[in-house]
Image 1 (cartoon, chains in turn cyan, blue):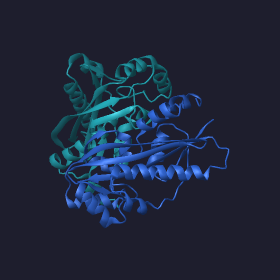
Image 2 (cartoon, chains in turn brown, blue):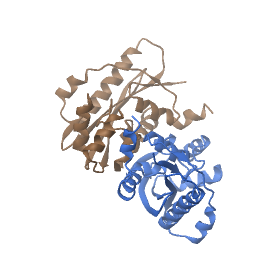
Image 3 (cartoon, helix red, strand yellow):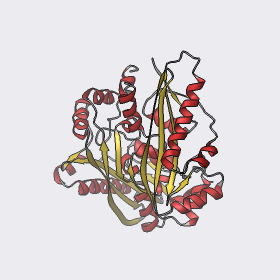
Image 4 (cartoon, chains in turn purple, yellow):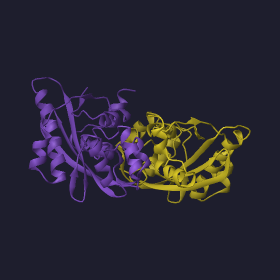
Length: 205
Length: 205
């Protein structure tokens, strides 16, 4: 049976795939993201190019292999007032990011790239979700940061965890906010790779 | 320290509270929901009255106790074309519900009621989120139903699990779709009960 490779080290992406009962393996790619960030100023292009780079690097790794696999890669950023916001490096940066997003609506943009080990085809796309936060006091933001959810997350929050308390509204794909737009993934796999994530489950039960 | 009692048997509500790092205990109330459903035709009133009934029944149970606790209760329904849709009783009902929701946008309405063991005050409210599904083939719906996610869930789906594959878009509170509007809970507790769910965490770390 065809394997699924998730070319991502994000625990959130792994979790959402597991919850959707999709069997997969992870492959961690090490892309120098800073080079892309310097070259590409448009958020949609940036996440698309980063997702593609991750997918292609994973593919290269499996090139000499006889493995028949689908490779999925993604990259997520937050955009506010035209500024691309990635991950915080420390608590201070996390506070500054959350202070900016506080009481406002930002865009959460994920780029996704899908290919196969034995197929030159690569499909990429981006999905945007608007996320609105309620207004928190500085003291509350500081207490939120203490729990460490900001680590490794674009925008320094995790909507499925304690950030649910200050997420007032989202408009768009919900799984996209966690880092992997599952509906888009399902539709691309069905349409472009004749691979159905429901039938996959059928073969296991 | 004040305790939090979740008057609900929903595993989804328990999970979302746990993920928000809120310590709590559950208390299962047995309300005859059918009586309410016959009497109340308006979805907002129905979920509000059911949430209130659950909260008050839990409160009554703790009445002779010296327990200092906040009691949280909730009830969720799905509404499509003015029809209130609850939980499916079997796979056939689950299929019929999902077939109705398929490719369309429905409302997910949660009623929430909050009170304290030693306080006559009870605050209730409702939160509505619009949920849009992509269009699935009957065969895919049947395969989805097989995994059992429909059990015990209003609308016969679980957005945080495999239903993420067919949830195209939501507009409104994301946690509300899982059964507990966390932002509303946070705001009511802070405003009406002077209880801050961030400070709570501070005392533990």
